[in-house]
Length: 263
Image (cartoon, rainbow, N blue to C red; front, side, top):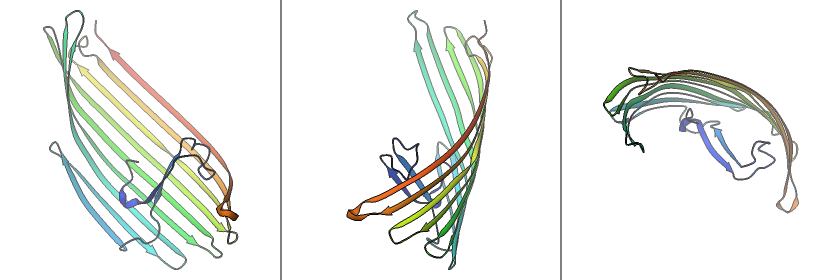
């Protein structure tokens, strides 16, 4: 969700209960984010902005292009962003044995990213349409910082660093046809995956007071989804909806860590 920009979104639908249209994973409800379609503004839109927090700037820029013809329409969105924010925290801990430990943490989070999406729709005869919606997003971030600890007459400092990378690519497709004035048929597919890599280190001058640690985490997710739906408007304001859905998900995760607490 953080990769989406307002320029990409046409509307957001919220279903508070499962329905035949939302699949088997919608037991508690569904949030359906629908990207833009067709021409909704000027043929080309360029937006640039920035926010500031704690002395750090977070600029953003997005480019949206629209194309509209008799039988097809399309739009493309490219966004780049940078997000930076400082973080400061202090902890004071008093134990039952009378020892007191104080910790002071200072860091700042810096993330850069880009995302691109498109919606291509071809309209056929008799209420038939084909739609393709590719989506790609990439982001990388760093969180350098320092950690100070004091306990009794001991004091030490540790340097911290966290690096993370995230990449997602998906392709959505839909075929829809109106069978009659009261019924329609729809097929859709979704294929893609995402990769995530995060590595964090803490280098301490006194491991007994602040441990020396390193963690490396990698996650890969791949999924394919195919679904079909038939809908028919019945008398008395009722509607009959039936469908089928197939999904395959494969996820792998690797976590490596080393910890040194001294003597």
